[in-house]
Length: 244
Image (cartoon, rainbow, N blue to C red; front, side):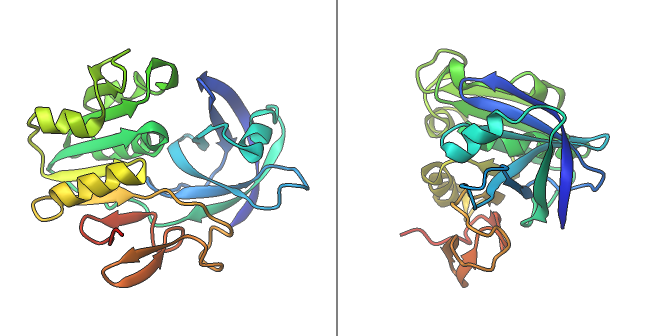
């Protein structure tokens, strides 16, 4: 679906990181994403951004200003409208009555907030939020409402010193189901570590052109052949993806 949505907030919440709030009546599922036209004629491709939260007809997404598109987005003022495509992708399956481990790394933290809110209704949650350092940390307080929160930073400026893989190596956690989003190297290591012993779902990041599965620009190799991250994902089961 295509819609023009009113911007009610667009503020910086950490170093190079912004939270955008849009008015939207239709509910989207945790793990899905939207595709945004940033209102620049020289930037033809839309920007895919994961849903961070949805409540009371307010859709929140969080993005990092790393290129011309996201930098242009950060300068669009409240009161303007954005042309978005939604809902895109397949969201996270929601389990019940489980001990759940949620892992968000870097910008992969953003889509895990909405997921944590929904899962906390019927599960016990342990949540690991992994950042480069304290300057890039965001949403840390928001997760406190949904489970036991563990923070890691590469330099130890807040929380555990080390990355999430190091934390898991040195600390035993009891969980039945894993949910994770972050850089490919993290997802690969989590997948290889837990695919034969745990239930789990991983949300993959990819460069996208159309966002609706038409261009095949974001294919990923799986045990069932090539699949499109935007259309068949971005969420895949543990053990489904084949790594080169």
